[in-house]
Length: 163
Image (cartoon, rainbow, N blue to C red; front, top):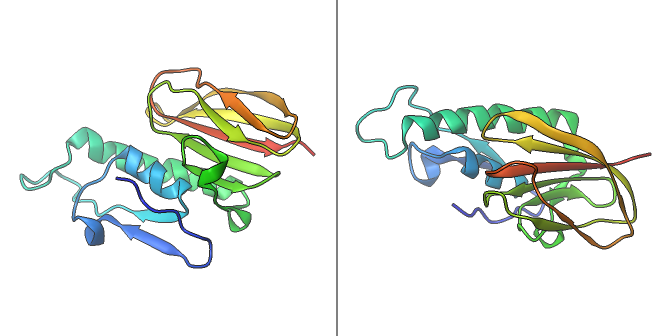
């Protein structure tokens, strides 16, 4: 439920089959990804009686796997490591001063991100809906800045420095 952050020295494959068996949900996938893990979902494809997760949770995990992959493909993932200290959510994958991916698991909750000075493009992603919910630019004087998702539910914020 609260995976420890990797330190970037080893590849961490978090396979639900080796953690607790079949199960998981969207929140677990995003928490794992922003803590530097490579989440792997043991997927039964149909819901046997002995599986704890609901069909909705299983579908959410499947979709989140694809969503995190799309973010991984567009970021310089090799340069990013978990930086829990940079966000009040404690779920932040970052190459400080260049790009940040922050997950807010609490519905509608404002949070802070410690940014280097500069101008950043931002993108709000709604993981429940699987779509972009807003984009724009923001300036940072080089300190913690507060962000509030433009929708209810858990949220993903991607920030990339403007060159």
